[in-house]
Image (cartoon, rainbow over all chains, first blue to last red; front, top):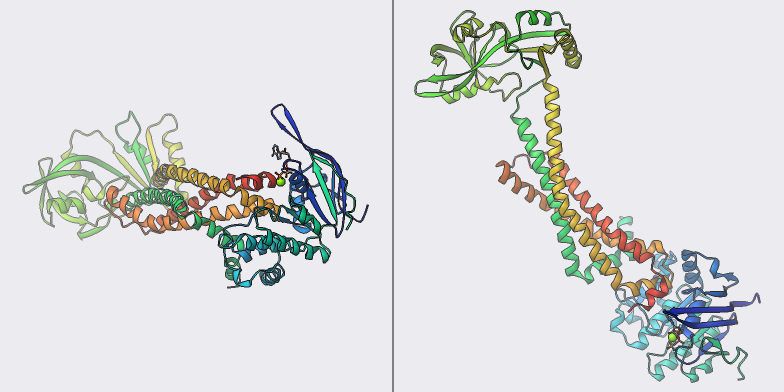
Length: 232
Length: 387
Ligand SMILES: Nc1ncnc2c1ncn2[C@@H]1O[C@H](COP(=O)(O)OP(=O)(O)OP(=O)(O)O)[C@@H](O)[C@H]1O
Ligand SMILES: [Mg+2]
């Protein structure tokens, strides 16, 4: 148990819409080890994003326990959760979610600003992340709306890596990209994983599951097909 | 230098500038509100201040003397009361005065003058001569004030007609400005004997007594001693300390300035609400951005800082512009209302502009506070979902 970086115990999340109770997550338990590459799959509305947001500490469980690096997140204040996210988790979103008023490189620098890194070190790190994410340095000063989808997602990946987080979370990172670009993004995530980063990816595309060593299937807020090792 | 460089390269500063530029038109509108508010406050303050300066400028050197009048219900201050006065300590001069308003004529001109019956020796501490000499006792001579001499074109030796008697002008006074006890500029000073002849139906006693104290610091205590001695049983004389009158005039005009600034600040209040509105719109539009920042590690303080910085920049820029334009606004109201803009650059006027600018900045910060607080407290997931 101590070597699991993410641990969920009996996590339940209920949304109440009028008199209707929707179990977005219903008693989900799982354990993810350091260095795992996990894919989460399942039909639309099965609770994949909800699960990922729990792991990313963007959302807190209604019931059950979420532990990141052994810390029970329900004991943390808003700002402590923010610090935990800043230091441990890199997010990659389907919509890229870059800040439009900042240039590509500034977007990458942003998490380092929140981490109070000084300007020179920040810029140097951002440039090296650019390379690592297969981005041409000449795009550094472009605004997000001047970049292609694939380029934007690479910027988002560079941003996710800014504070060297041990965990990368990606919610359908290839959903808005063509197959070929999607594959190169997945290859990039695979690369990161091979260097030791724990990667958790929500995806609809079964082919992308090939990059992972663990696949979780969700159905109606419950884990459907175990979280056992995949035969490969 | 290092600090300037650090501030200008600070990403928060940069972000604030870009966000203000992103909606330049809206920013300008909000800024105009603040600019108008600052101009309104400063020029109203300047107007009040100029009013005060122009009034206290037209007051002569009133100094700090004690003036006694007959109390309500009494007609004169009696010889006996003046005798009693002289028993009060720390007094330098006691100057009893007879006075009446009368018509003065010279050649074809005529006007009104205040005629004072006064001993020759008492005139020295009271007024300054421009030309000629003081009264000889018992004579039918007179000494006239500057404005009166000006109005009637009096010269030394002119024969001035007052109350159908002819007086010879032997002295003309320096201009001194309006005073509380007497108004020397429009005065005709004559000897008490001449005065008795001119106004023979007067009762025995004086209309006014001016008391000058040895040490100005004692003026209040002397006034109290006088009250005690003369008004022991009943109020027979009214005791005024001119310095206190000045103080209350000062107070009145400070209140007027405040009141005028209050009127001006209404427009600043409106400007504050428009800042609130603009910033609130901006936080709504940037909800998703706030969510992203929180997701990647921005604390509540950092979000708060970003939005307050925007309000601060907007406030500083607009208020400074308003401060500069306030000179124009102050000039305009002074010309329109006072017909005189010479008090515009008085240090105390500048102070009102500084106050206006400060108010402008504070208002912007106050207007930005709620939106910034609201932004900083957004829950990251809700913010991320926001479209
Ligand atoms: N804020 C919310 N309010 C109410 N219901 C919600 C909310 N967020 C999610 N849900 C519900 O919870 C369930 C799980 O949603 P979730 O977003 O996790 O699904 P998903 O598996 O990510 O779907 P998709 O593949 O379409 O992204 C859905 O039924 C959804 O309607
Ligand atoms: Mg989803």
